Length: 364
Image (cartoon, rainbow, N blue to C red; front, side):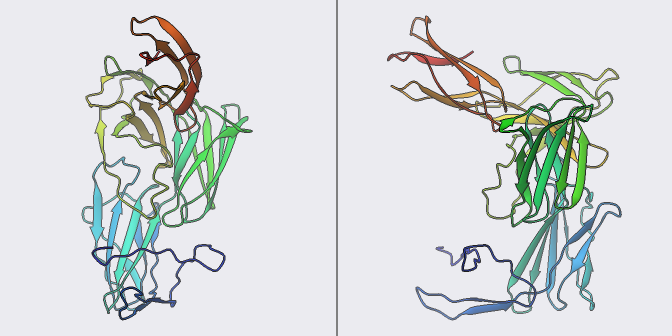
């Protein structure tokens, strides 16, 4: 780049990603313009997190400096994060004492940056395996081990399998996304269903609590029923499951959470959502289970994109939502319609039954 920075993926002769290991020698040789080669020996650097003891530590080659950052990429802690600067002991072990303190639970992301004595840097990211299950949709996402395999399953209250999904964690931080399907068709989860997952050898399971909610975009009111006495968080802006998997590396997610206090004894919820949410944007209601895993429900404001002089109309809405479109003339008369179902990511692509210049498409 213009500042001399560079990025490169290490590949073997078959084009598969390579993972540097402790003791490997990395050499970077500038070609144009030519310059002196840079070289570093990959240090030992591991990150371990134990939710049971609320500890974070690992191993690092003695003699270097270490900085550790922890944050919750699921967004449930808002802007909260912790930092630590542990010194590797003579035996190579280190333990992080975060300032401010952090909760070690599923979804906690820990990034360790190790600087060698000659100034080079090694980075390792570990996310405590997390299952984040969508209520009212087909998606299950979260974090597993980097490049780890994932299998998910949706069961009804009687234990019957409604759908299954599979995926692979991203090679840098283990982020994954699966779509629960019955054959090739995405399925919808509901209250009291169970979403179970094998996260690269770590078992996770959540029973979906009541998040039976409806958003009135005209009044900007969210109404319905949640678990009595719980305090779900409202997260804005919402992010689709798997939306960050195209980012080649870990990063911090920017957003914020709002808490509306505990629901009343009967679990009813009636709140105004005080956010300027534009078409194509959304928010989510989320809560953690006793095991530390996560359930969420998303609400997206409809967005329509009309392709002028063609019958094609695309857009976004809630996952698997039924979509009905009406084509009207300038005087409001109905000229054509189209209907269909959004996919697991809320996208739809429809063709109206008629098209004439000067008309508009309006969601019903």
